[in-house]
Picture (cartoon, rainbow, N blue to C red):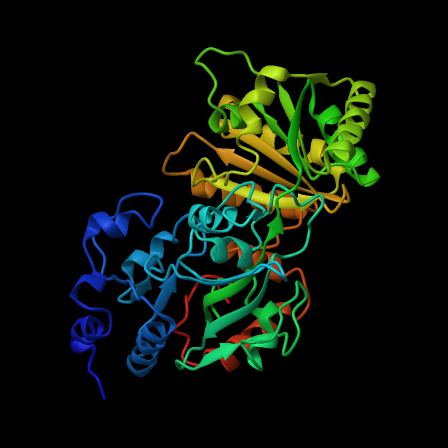
Length: 443
């Protein structure tokens, strides 16, 4: 049996001397703030088989393994004597299925890498409105909201490869049976892969997945409108997508827009900006644009051609979260204004400047609901505590959090009878030694 003191030496044999690092400069990049000490070591495996070897070793030594499923790791992870797996070297695009519009990729494949590859064949992917990582798989498995969620609300990932806590490989869906089968956008086979969605690798470590891709259309365009208030912007995002018009419906305040768009310093931005994206046959899109302009005019919005030129080139880009300090939740459109007022009141009490908060709203499932993102640009030591306080307040008022983490996760799960116990049973079944991302969901 391997000894704990041999851990680094054995890891070097698995990933090579260049595949393991523990310097503080690198480690600090995984956290919100720089760290001064840590026992973590970062490993860079190049294949699923290498991940299996690492996990088997961790299982034998009862050593915790961490993976990055958000913009950063919780601060307490830095104090653990464990292994952090970085998937940057697992960046192989294994196969692009043009007929069935699926791409089979490793976890380290980035959006830029995949977009460049498939664009040569006239294909594209839908991109996140607030990406938590450059990794395609990490974003889609963790259900990061897509800009096109009004039209495509489903999770854009199916068959997955998961390394279990004892090092075995679990293949989900049709790939359980054969890699040669035609893949569809609905997963066949043993569909327990939903366990792994947004679970932060606590049941198994996802290393590869099949993701949805789409053909480029004849026309791609964007319309941008100014709104004076939140109410009008929300009404546009709620009512117009229900008419099956357009692909993307998003609204953002001036602060969020300023962080996203390349606008000249001092440029006066509207209180709220609504972006509507279109793609399809040119004749059809011309008709849809005319219809949307009419609906927006009735709601009091005004076309903004200067912002249209700026945002048209960004609609298919990945929009990263502009700051590590953020929160996001789902709600109905008629409740957004009340949530926003409650947040404003709470920030005033904490003397947090209103000019340092940005808001992005994404219409989901043809306007049935909204994903609301708050970004806190005044980064300081107590921002995490502030966000935790706001999250609990929003939860009490009925906001829905689809991916709560840490202590807040337990607060959310406690509202559902028996849910925490159910998660613990699955965790004990899948990871009896508790080595996979311990503490992430605080169960």
